[in-house]
Image (tube, rainbow, N blue to C red; front, side):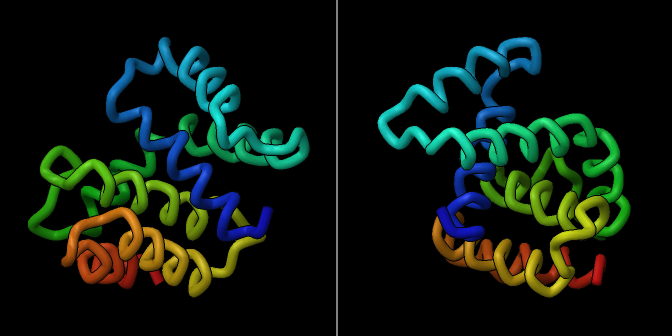
Length: 131
């Protein structure tokens, strides 16, 4: 899988956090990898590892988002936008392998693909405050 496809899979797995309790996520992760779009072992390991790293820092990431997104709170954000922002903020603040510009660009592309019409502008605006 390409980096973009891997990021999209991480987004899809991370999105499940919005609809399940954290204690249910191991089962959700199992179901995710057992689905029809099952990734190759190496890709699945990368997706799982990055998902776990992000989920361990969700509280910190949400605090950063609440601080930077003036007039917005993570509770008010759309679930798709919030998930995209969480992934991007993790990459910007904690993943040294991903340049900030790449993280922002990829987040905007995810927002165009999965978000509403104005999602990409919102995501770009919030992430610009992290650049």
